[in-house]
Length: 387
Ligand SMILES: Cc1cc2nc3c(=O)[nH]c(=O)nc-3n(C[C@H](O)[C@H](O)[C@H](O)COP(=O)(O)OP(=O)(O)OC[C@H]3O[C@@H](n4cnc5c(N)ncnc54)[C@H](O)[C@@H]3O)c2cc1C
Image (cartoon, rainbow, N blue to C red):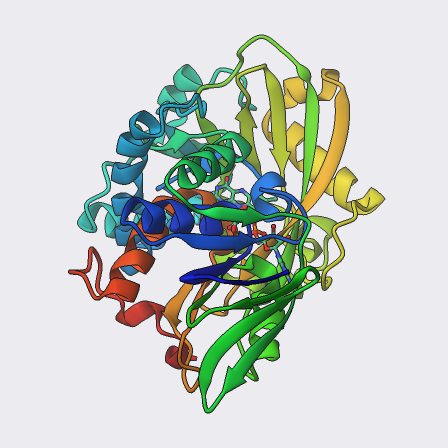
């Protein structure tokens, strides 16, 4: 196989497909190269939250708010069932110290335009009766939403294909040909594709694609183990996180210093219920390279933590477990930028635990940055040179 392409997108996760969709809609026909299948990476091994409550006030939250607006449009525009629902989200608080931290977090989020508030114990229990009696209260944001990430990724791919994007699945990118500082071609397990534009949307694997062009990309895989239960009647509204989830997400050092099992594995509760009634229970945050296995201690820690907060889960059977690799950057914010010194390579990766929520705005912003259109968001904070 030898072909040419206007643009090659490496990675068929939600980020690669969102970019493919926005490019194709604009008449740019990319070739998406994916070594497994669509949503074969983190986008098919994750939760389903489009959650604003967990985002750091400032640019992170600004990006998430813009993406949330786009989700409402896209859920209609794609014309496919993607199980998009807006049922709100809460972050439960278990100690006075957490209350103080969350009070400050919420005040800053409100200043950034989020419609979030603190609920006392009684209000929290009224909204989610399944919570344990030790829960002191919660943050609540009615605008938090959910989507089925696999259905969403597939819907973006289907529409991108209808608009002219091409897909090479089960095809691995093995090299990037650069001559005189410019991208010339992408080498794959099925031959070469001549192109002047490579978009690296390989998630946790983005640094390996960077290496192929001599570029250092500071992204590390951060494993998250998830548990799935049997289907049950609807018992919760929207998503439930714990304040410890926020600590584990933004403060890996704090987690690494803790001696108990929960801290060591970075466990913070994320709980949602699918359309079919299965609970998705998460998750760990671990740096273990590219290992996507589940471990007995990971499963135990996630299950015990969830039962502590939602006791009824103890009586509900687990039916399977899996793990995904979040693309972690040191400041928790993605890299959306041209590669320095390699003309024609664009990096769109590093969304950590927020890639589902941030996919629509990422696709739109990458299109705008590549074509020189007016930008929806100030791109400075996403530059690779910040590291
Ligand atoms: C446990 C867990 C829970 C999560 N929960 C949420 C949540 O509730 N909400 C949220 O917003 N986000 C969540 N996330 C984060 C979200 O899943 C990721 O941020 C998002 O999926 C990243 O998408 P991506 O397209 O960048 O990466 P991926 O989906 O990993 O896609 C990258 C693709 O690149 C392909 N690839 C790699 N190397 C090559 C190569 N050499 N050639 C060709 N293809 C290649 C891979 O096979 C993969 O399919 C969660 C993640 C985990 C692990």
